[in-house]
Length: 267
Image (cartoon, rainbow, N blue to C red; front, side, top):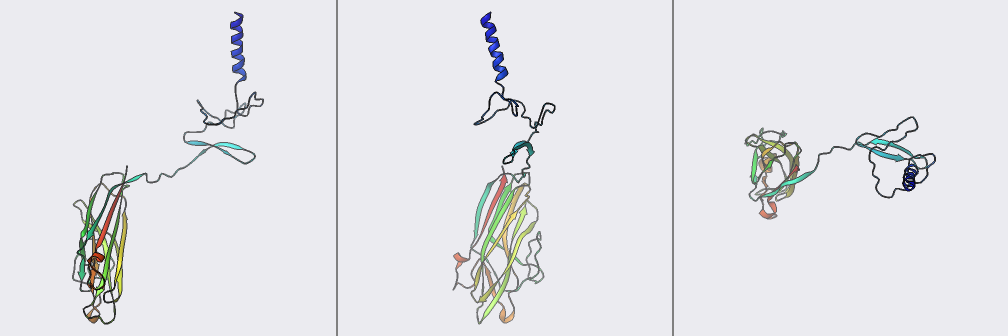
């Protein structure tokens, strides 16, 4: 019986004097935490004999600030939502080795996004000519409208005259048309440029566009170019896009057009 009483007394004494508290006025021991600290229920701050202290709320973090005088509190941290993770679902490059040629001045008016594909011999309506090899299609299956399609188009434009006698210029435009399912084909990106110099002068043309907020469905994309101001009379020039009009300086390998389609969707 005496041994049992001694055992109970030692257990009670050990439990009473082995507790460790934060800001205890007369601590029996010090606590040095090296590593992880697991808390079973709550970790309350700034309490006293009458105030229970704050246990924080879900999503808050425990913050300690100060160099000499430390101040501890729970803080709410706002993290930007962002667009989530995207992954490649389609990547393809098409090549056109045919190109298009123009021998007359076309429309020099402004182009409107979402306008239709048109051909014309008038100077009031855009005369688009498709680069037949630069047509591609892709599918969007994501329903959150966070998918993106990145389209990169590159070609070569050259001017020439049969009887050159000075410097000339020829302006043009290239655009990317997009069609969803059986819907209309619409202009989604366009840039104009000009080639200046002697007959045979040429330049590289680039067009990049990112399509956002894409609905699910099958999309068809194609590249097309249009003649603008090619001069008139003695100053009229021939314009080749994606194909040479003067093979003295460049050939078809140097003039070919490429279009790369990259599709990103959430996963």
